[in-house]
Length: 269
Image (cartoon, rainbow, N blue to C red; front, side, top):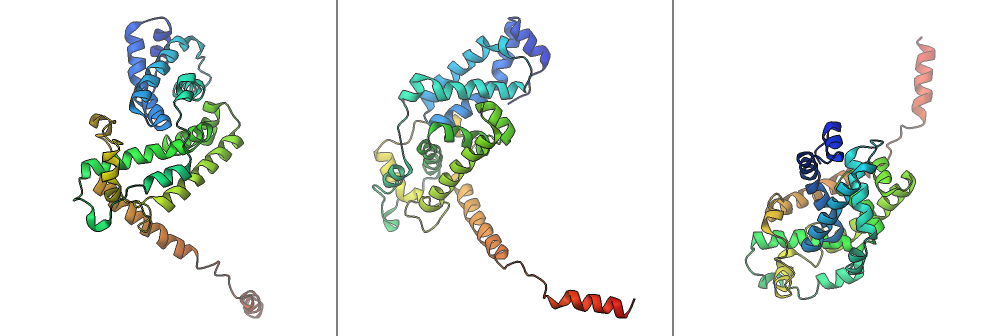
């Protein structure tokens, strides 16, 4: 989110049309990103983005500069995403158990999988990644999106959600654990032994029309499927290696060394 100067904010408050336009342009991408990660529905996210930007403009007089402008915008956005009736009404009520069952429904055999279509596989990967977060309740989802995806620090995340830093940290930790555990257990990109792999899942996803909702331009800056697959497998190896190295133990010195050193120093001052 581009930083807004005081001059632009003041001019926008005064009703300057050019300043208002510059302000909206500066924040719209991050507001939309937040909405997409919270809602995982392109049309709903676009509608929410428009509503949020309208609120930003109409509430602009309430911004007093006591926090960063970007932080204030996120507060306006998350308040809408957590309380708007039309958003709440569209929440699918997913659970990780439900999502896990859905992922393995209609998987094709590895030997029967069609040749990889990396464009469609990448859309499947991204769609699944976003939909997964719908298994979190809205408050934990907001903490996860702000903390781990948008990389707000704990103090800023707490300010945005208007909760204590300790509460934000607790929500983020809980959400992170749930997402990590599910991913490690169910996603073939994170765990090669998991049942669901994108090539096995793609035919069922296409037949159920789970793809094609995200405009291609929305996904154009996302890394391609092959790149993510290689990176995920490399990271898995790196993390496993690191865990093995960390599991060697404390390697404490033998207890007699201290006495031997003391004796050496005492005998040979």
